[in-house]
Length: 138
Image (cartoon, rainbow, N blue to C red; front, side, top):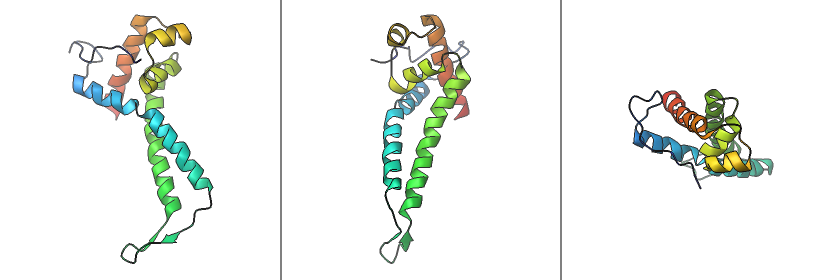
């Protein structure tokens, strides 16, 4: 599983980022399924009847509904970053690119199983471009 891309490319490449920055961003994106799960779970909690509860006096009153909303917004923001960067990179193959960067799906899987309309060279070029754009915008 996973996309097989060299972590270090030539500094002459138009989409160059350092190996460690690439790994940082790759692992950021691979958390997407976890964010999605947590976002859904927090939404289910928010739908239950939550009320303000009193906490120990030194903390005062805490609004659990607001806490859930803040956590959900933070998760949604991270998910949007990944999705929007895919769209900026290439609107034509953005859904396939998304599955590659967020779910670790390989080119072979995307091309043969899902019917991605891109050849290997184009896909990997867009894959590197995705991380380049992500690196320079977030």
